[in-house]
Length: 314
Image (tube, rainbow, N blue to C red; front, side, top):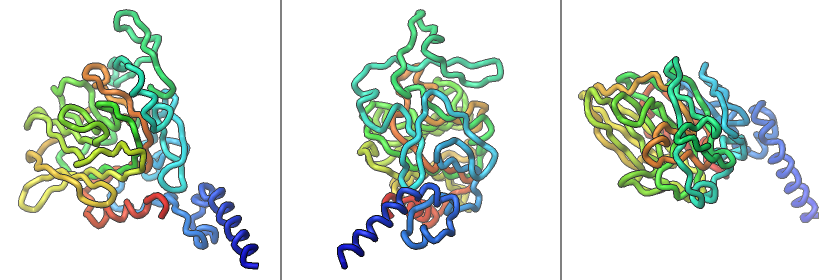
């Protein structure tokens, strides 16, 4: 009798898991209450939430008006919880880019000032087509309006997974050129003086100071899901700090120059970076989910709430 009951329970759990993604559309149904299935159907924190891209089979902004435009062979696959996630480069493994020497991705600026990544047959460097592996041109373009914070506080949060050992990878960027001559902010993995797989926030306002860099204390390319949160935080005394949280805990921070403004007219792009033209940066090879942008600095307690809401296997 016990064996039959146990078997029935396991069958029910398998059924619940099979329909979990659909159940997220109706968070109050009994299935979620019984099996406590993790679900991103509703954002854990809505105060100050500007945009939210779960990546659950599309690039729609579930919080605002900044739907993304997908191109270049982007795929979707299981995310950290029940929903799906963006998958770049054909998977989260090292085989795609670490075993093949790829030339940088070419790009140009169109008449409207938009960054346009060129297709293989449009690459004009020496007349040689640029090879593109499965998904190597994948990106999500969120437009030029989102990500212009001015001198105000902000928070950028997301889940990521990669096991690539590439020296430097793209991730999320709002940057028009690679020369550092105009304001920008960008998130890459690895780079000079940064171990491969270590997320790095780049902040540049050439009118105030040289580019500043904040990176995590350890690499994240272990093939596991990690929750990363970048925060710009001002105090009543007038000081400003950039902080990074990893998996719900404060990891590192640096002071920022006062009144730094990184706003620009470049699009916010996930998966590609304009510096693929010049410094060996490669397209992102991995997964991303639950990308969220807030108009204020989240507290440590709020960051922990975000992490617990999407923690795998909770």
